[in-house]
Structure formats: C-alpha cells, structure tokens
Amino acid sequence: MSTLDDKAEETVGQVETTKSPEKDQKKKDQKNGSWGIILIFFVIGLVGSLAVGWWIFPKLLYSQKKQPIDFNHVIHVEAVEEGCESCHFFREDGSFSGVPKLAQCVDCHEEVMGEDPEEFKFVEEYVAKGNEVPWLVYSRQPDCVFFSHVAHVKMGKVDCITCHGHIGESTHSRVYEENRLTGYSRDIWGKNIAGLKKDTWDRMKMDDCAECHAELKAKGKIVQALPWPINWMPRPYEKPASSQVRVHIKKDACFVCHK
Ligand code: HEC
Ligand code: HEC
Ligand code: HEC
Ligand code: HEC
Ligand code: HEC
Image 1 (cartoon, helix red, strand yellow):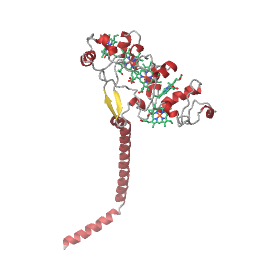
Image 2: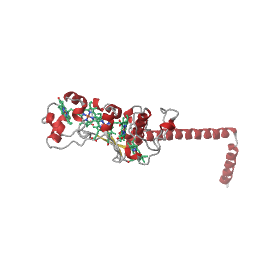
Image 3: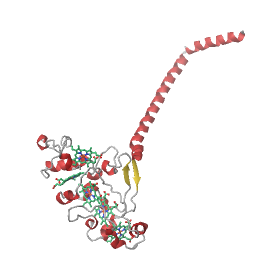
C-alpha cells in the first residue's frame, strides 16, 4: 500500500517540478541544442555533396588509362629533322597522318640506343614483334564528327597549340581519361567538371568548334553557315546588329561537321 502512495507522490512531484523555471530553461537549452544538431547535419550534408560533385563524381565518371609507352616529345623534336612534320604530316591527298605508325620509328629504333626503360620496352614489345603501338588519342571525337586537319592547318592557318595545347613540348605522355558513360575522352568535356575553360584547348565540344567558326565568320574570314542552335546562341563579340551576322537555319548545315 505504502509503495503505491509513494509512487503517487512521486508523480505529483514530477508534474510540479516540470512547471518550475529551471525546467523551462532546460527545455529551451534542448531546443537550442537541436538547432545546433540540425546546423551540423546541414553543414555535413553540404560539404558532403560538394565533395561528391566536385571530387568523387569526376573520379568515378572518368577511368584513367596510361599510354602504352611514355613518349617524350622534347627529345624527339630535337632528334628529327623537320620538327613536328617529321611525324605528323599531310599526305599527297591532303589527309593527315595523325599519330605516327611504327614504320616511322624503326629507322632510329631498330635497336635500343639509350638507357631509358621506356625505349627498351618500346623496342622489345613493339619494334621487335612488329606490333603497332595502340596509342590513345586525347582529342578523339565521337565517330559521327567529321574533322579535317588540312582545312584547319593549311587553309585556316590555325596552329596545333590552339586546339591541342602544348603536347608538342611535353616530356611525358599524360594520363588518358575516358568517360565511363560515353566512352569519350575527357579532353572533349575538359578537365573542369563545370565545363569552364581558360585556354582555347581546354575543351573541344560542339560549341567550341562553332565558337571559333562564328568568330572567324564575324570577321568575314569564313563563309560557312552555322546551323541552329549554334547561330542562335548569344555571343558577346558579335556586333549589336547581330541579326545580320546570323545565318538562316539550314537544314543540312549539321553535315558540315557530322557524317
Ligand atoms: C618522333 C615523332 C614525333 C614528333 C617529331 C612529334 N610527335 Fe607528336 N606524337 C608522336 C607520338 C608517338 C604521339 C602519341 C603519344 C602521345 O600522345 O604522347 C604523338 C602525339 C601528339 C599529339 C596528341 C594527339 C592526341 O590528341 O592524342 C599532339 C597534339 C602532337 N603529338 C603534336 C606534336 C607537335 C606540335 C609536334 C612538334 C612540336 C610533335 N607532335 C612532334 C610522335 C611525334
Ligand atoms: C630521328 C630518330 C628517331 C625517331 C624517328 C624516333 N626516335 Fe625515339 N628516340 C630517339 C632518340 C635519339 C632517343 C633518345 C635515346 C636515349 O638516349 O635515351 C629516343 C628515345 C625514345 C624513347 C625513350 C624516351 C621516351 O620517349 O620516353 C621512346 C619510348 C621512343 N624513343 C619511342 C619512339 C617512337 C614511338 C617513335 C616513332 C613515333 C620514335 N621514337 C621515333 C630517336 C628517334
Ligand atoms: C580555332 C578555330 C577553330 C576551331 C576550334 C575549329 N575550327 Fe573548324 N575551321 C576553322 C577554320 C579557320 C577553317 C577553314 C576555313 C577555310 O576554309 O579557310 C575551318 C573549317 C572547318 C571545316 C571545313 C569546312 C569546309 O567548308 O570544308 C570543318 C568541317 C570544320 N572546320 C569542323 C570543325 C570541327 C568539327 C571542330 C571541332 C572539333 C572545329 N572545326 C574547330 C577554325 C576552327
Ligand atoms: C582546329 C583545331 C585543331 C588544330 C589546329 C589541330 N588539330 Fe589535331 N586534332 C583536332 C581534333 C578535333 C582531333 C580529333 C579528330 C577526330 O577524332 O576525328 C585531332 C586529332 C589529332 C591527332 C590524332 C589523330 C589520330 O587519330 O591519329 C594528332 C596526332 C593531331 N591532331 C596533331 C595535330 C598537329 C601536329 C597539329 C598542328 C600541325 C594539329 N593537330 C592541329 C583538332 C585540331
Ligand atoms: C561546327 C561543327 C558542328 C556543327 C555545325 C554541328 N555539330 Fe554536332 N557536334 C560537333 C562535335 C565536335 C560534337 C562532339 C563533341 C560534343 O559532344 O559536343 C558534336 C556532337 C553532337 C551530338 C552528340 C553526339 C554524341 O555522340 O555525343 C549531337 C546529337 C549533335 N552534335 C547534333 C548536331 C546537330 C543536330 C547539328 C545541326 C543543327 C550539329 N550537331 C551541328 C560539331 C558540330
């Protein structure tokens, strides 16, 4: 019996104490405390999603591949007689040789000349066996894109650096990054995950091709009609009377760059 009474008294006591000012203060503190926790979770969430977006996502999106041989451009530009054109040249028909074939290397690399382990690997695994080196092409465009070097280098007088950067002055082949979803080289989208660019060679998307063409066209240097939506996009360098510069929608103009 007595225990029941004790309990009743206890609960009454509790009800009374919750009404006391100290308990109110405690509740307030608790409320403040939960705001603090919400803030902490918010910050963790924000930092976390930024890390995922800017750091982890690009790492997951792109797989890294090493070139089969680490190639030193500086040594070779000195060793050859005609600079870049010794290896990257135009054939009689105007087609571009691209990355050199093994036949262009064997004259010098019949046998190992130096101490470099990369040269050793190259001679052992490729020259001796007659296998072409499966070079990865950083600037490779999707198959549907038509690109001609002769139009740009010979007719347009655009230099290699404008589109490729300073690969010709490199002492090592850099890592090739492949988009896991599209299979395209990262050089198309660019290093910057937000798609921003500082230099002309940072990115080579459709808009980048069109941007240069439009610029030249505005200067009257190119008579190529750019199709919608490219001609429609606002361009800071176009004069106010830009409607005169813009070209009419041409149904087949896509096939200037696409096949
Ligand atoms: C001895 C031959 C040789 C010479 C000379 C040479 N290259 Fe190369 N080049 C190569 C080979 C091999 C590759 C492929 C390996 C690589 O990408 O590092 C290559 C790759 C390139 C690429 C990369 C293309 C891509 O998108 O993957 C560019 C751009 C390039 N060379 C420009 C130049 C320029 C500019 C010069 C002159 C300053 C030059 N090369 C001189 C052999 C040569
Ligand atoms: C005109 C002669 C010449 C030609 C052509 C040439 N090389 Fe070389 N190569 C050299 C010389 C010289 C060295 C430096 C050797 C040393 O002392 O280590 C070298 C070094 C190398 C090395 C080791 C250094 C490095 O780049 O990492 C590799 C690999 C190599 N060459 C690959 C190639 C390939 C691939 C080609 C064909 C696209 C080629 N070479 C064409 C002369 C040439
Ligand atoms: C830095 C400037 C620049 C960039 C970037 C550029 N082009 Fe060009 N393009 C030119 C010039 C200059 C010409 C040649 C104009 C002439 O005929 O004299 C040209 C011509 C062409 C032609 C030939 C048109 C014809 O009538 O035969 C095609 C196709 C083309 N470009 C496609 C592309 C594609 C695809 C890309 C992107 C991967 C690209 N271009 C990027 C400047 C550029
Ligand atoms: C207007 C931009 C532009 C200019 C200028 C340019 N390139 Fe390229 N280059 C490209 C594009 C785009 C590709 C990829 C083409 C493709 O995938 O069809 C490419 C591909 C290449 C390749 C790889 C070709 C292969 O598939 O084997 C080499 C090597 C190369 N370029 C070297 C050069 C050199 C050397 C110069 C200067 C003489 C030069 N390029 C000038 C845009 C350019
Ligand atoms: C100035 C050259 C140029 C013109 C003109 C052009 N394109 Fe492109 N287009 C490209 C290049 C380069 C790419 C590959 C790089 C990229 O994805 O942005 C591409 C990619 C594309 C792709 C994505 C293909 C893929 O496999 O990812 C589509 C779709 C496309 N273009 C449609 C069009 C249509 C439709 C037109 C006509 C309204 C057009 N393009 C005109 C250069 C051009």
